[in-house]
Every structure is written in structure tokens, then in C-alpha cells.
Length: 139
Image 1 (cartoon, one colour):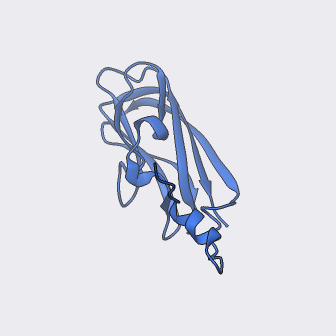
Image 2 (cartoon, rainbow, N blue to C red):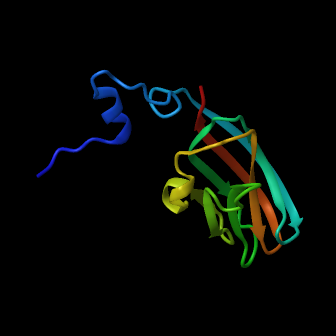
């Protein structure tokens, strides 16, 4: 059995200690919440739901939705990568999509290099309520 340390834990226990990025260690967790009422929303539309500041580190995205229609999927990302946080996930029946369960590993802990809008992209026409919360830290 081995005892090993994560990168930030290694930094704070070094002699002399190396400060960890405050967005990753003891940062303030923040949330942006939004909702959208889709009415025959055209295939491949984007819904802007949050605007994160430069330096924001994303830790969770939660989407709750109605039954949006046959074959509908939702993906969550940004202008650089449409599915950075959640890859296309079925939303034909009412439910929730959670980044920590359904998401892409590259989005977890992703730090914004500039002010960035978070978007939801649908596949197939969608009708119903979509609610989203984006949890991030920034200092």
C-alpha cells in the first residue's frame, strides 16, 4: 500500500509551502441559475444560460428538464466546445442531467481563460422547461 498526494496537497505540504490556486483550494463556490421555456425550439439551437468570468473554475452543471420530445438530446458547453461539460444526453423524458454523472472529464475543473458564456445545445425540436445551475469558483 502506498501513500500519495494530489498536486495541490503536495504544494501546500512542501517546504516552503507553494500556494495553491485559490479557485482550486479554499475558493468560494458560486452558482448561476437560469431557466428557459422551449416552444418548438429548432434543432441545433443554443440557449445561453450563464456568463462566467475569466478565471472561473467549473465544478458542476445540473440540468433539470421536462419531457422535451422524441429523440431530443441536450449538451452543455461553451462557444469553444459545445459539449465541454455534458455530452449529448437524452432528454425525451423528464429528468435531470448532472455533469458529475453524465459529463465529460475535461470539463470538470476547467478554468475559463476569458469571460465565457455557458450554452445548452439541443438535437431535435424541443418543447418544455429547461432549468440549469452552473457551480464554479473564482477568486
